[in-house]
Length: 86
Image (cartoon, rainbow, N blue to C red; front, side, top):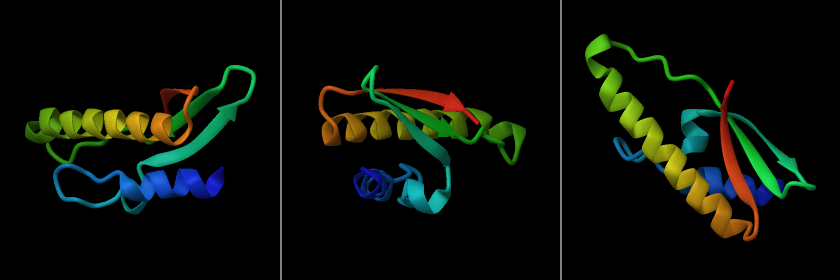
């Protein structure tokens, strides 16, 4: 399971610069609840460099979460994904 999750983190790319989520180090960890069949993805909180860039960074972050959710659910059918801030 770890290898498959690591592959997902390598496949999902930042829409702004094409860097993988693994390289960006956005995910603090992933926990799996077998009873609930649910992955909890712990993401580091976004810390924008400049106030003017907040909207763009939050939009990119939301896109990354969407792509991660889709890829994890495709890799592990019949499981759900939730996101939590770390």
